[in-house]
Length: 102
Image (cartoon, rainbow, N blue to C red; front, side, top):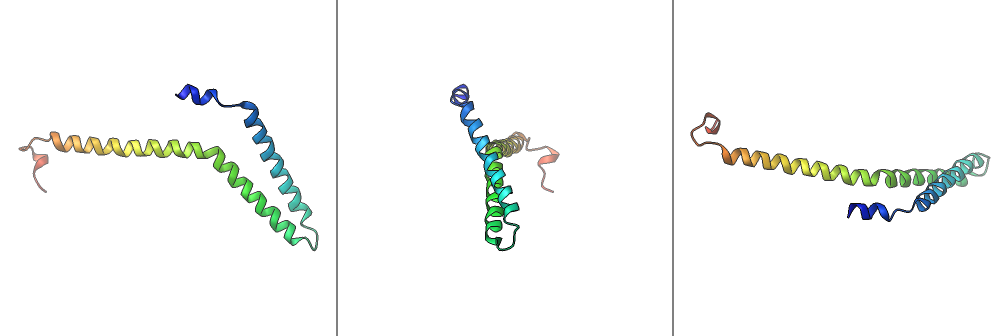
């Protein structure tokens, strides 16, 4: 199944998305500069909002998959720690010093 996921990736599609994102960021930056002129405060505010939105979108697209992987590994670690604790607790001998209440 893992190989099938990589097989459906189209490199042209990824390149097109990257080019569009770069173009949109360039338009936003140039609009911020154009909106610096007197009487164009609304253009500048809209361009800053567009730039911020595009930065967050690119961040989410790049690191969203990594975040899912990190959460999966963190959850797996917590489950493994719980299993180790339960196994240690279940295999403890009744007469051992560690089993005595403190």
